[in-house]
Length: 288
Image 1 (cartoon, rainbow, N blue to C red):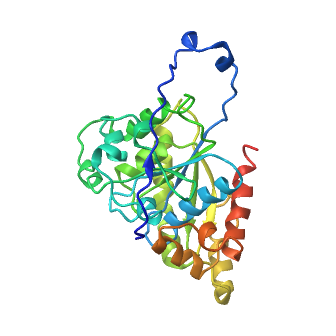
Image 2: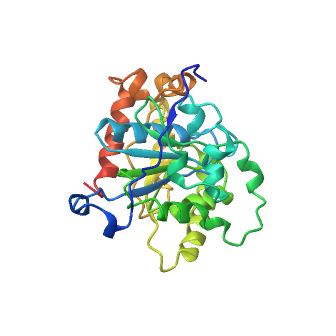
């Protein structure tokens, strides 16, 4: 992890949110629509976190305001990839899930241009919460944040843990869209059934509370020397779901998180950066 200075927290706006108390000029400020995108995979090592980080960075490069929420309890997610040391519990997503702090009070500004709600190792203990509404915690926090003056974001990405647990379910319940990174090899392909089972269960849980769209699969770590295997795996994917632009093997993608950086910071002119730009264009088509 990088020894760079810790990012600073963004203080919540002190502006009143009651429309009746706002100056007339503020009543007519048009705020961007916000889409919440869960980046999910059941298996580790398929590029889930690098997808979340670099896809958010691609949107930032295009002048979109992006927030990244790290739901990985083991500390191997977006927080570390962006060079951030584990923050105190009260300044992390842990406080949000425990309803001890509003989401706006936990947002960090990073030097990548991505705003971050960092993770904390204390998330592990939350897996045993007995609260019947535990799966709704992140959705509840976002519902109180999105659409307020504290939320300038066009996209909010959620980096899920590499397993289907209470944190992954929180992300799916809160999301509008889901993208599924995977390595086009037989073993990662076998885990996709469990991901879709979780999505079906969450759709039932969210009945009457908005749709949850599977936006597509993202082939990751694609190796040109195994193109025949890749084509064979892609043919066996569930029908009716788009296959989004692929991300090929790249040393830049592997090295960037070791420096606490995005691909756009270490190699903006690389093929890897261009592939994330193409992925951004495909996803942005829904909103732009």
